[in-house]
Amino acid sequence: MNTALDTNVKNSSNRECAIIPAVDIIENKDEYTLYADMPGVAKENLDISIENMELTISGKIEDAGSEKPSYREFELGNYKRKFLLNQEIDSEKISASLDRGVLTLALPKREAAKPRQIEIKTA
Amino acid sequence: MLTREFDIFNDVLGLKNIVDSYFDTNRGKTGYPPINLYENGDTVKAEIVVPGAERSDIGLELVENTLNVSFTKKTETSSAEYIRRERGSGNFSKSIRMPFRVNPDSIKAELKNGILTVSLDKSDEAKPRKIEIK
Image (tube, rainbow over all chains, first blue to last red; front, side, top):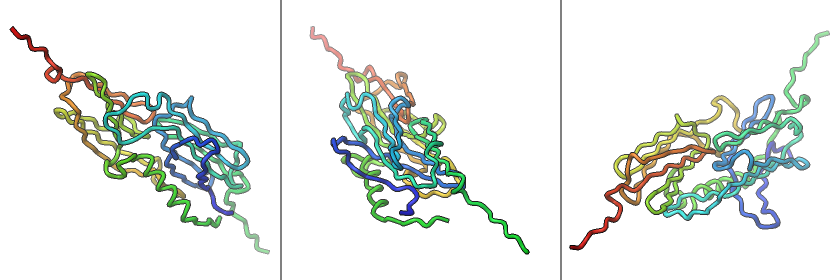
């Protein structure tokens, strides 16, 4: 119950195949920052949505596999990954940017969740 | 300070998917960055996956018929508390031989959305020549 960000590896009901992008998650006192490698995805094909406390990142590749490679080490496909947000995160203030195939998500913490110093008064 | 449950199964499963998504059938044998080659008549196209790379992070060199690519994958921030780290960073390099002799002047490279696409034409000597029989 107290995990900060959880990975939800679910297969969706209509059996779409998707690559799970690798992510780095960083925490500082004001926000979480998430970086996801999604090479081949352009901004117009990126979709980020939140339902309840679940964040879904998905990206589509255009012209997937129209040519057949003579030598293949990787296969590009659509990306999808879900995360369970916790109460600390202010979901209205989440912002995203996509640059050079890397998605950067800023997830600010609610004011009340930030660490505060409590002053001790001596009588 | 929040207490966090460490769920080992989450991490192990995540790692397997990351590896699978980069290396298709040749699990781990092919190294990083992954490259695909497409042959199209007289041209060959190489697609190299380099997420987050700027032009200065990539080194591209053609030596005869071998394409050498080097890639520095940087982390966005050095002094930060990572609570999950899957992407990896470091210096990588790889060489790949072209399937036929290429014309070095025809090389073109384009970096878009984290993928480097290099295209090369077949060299004139490598193209089939008709031999006239007198």
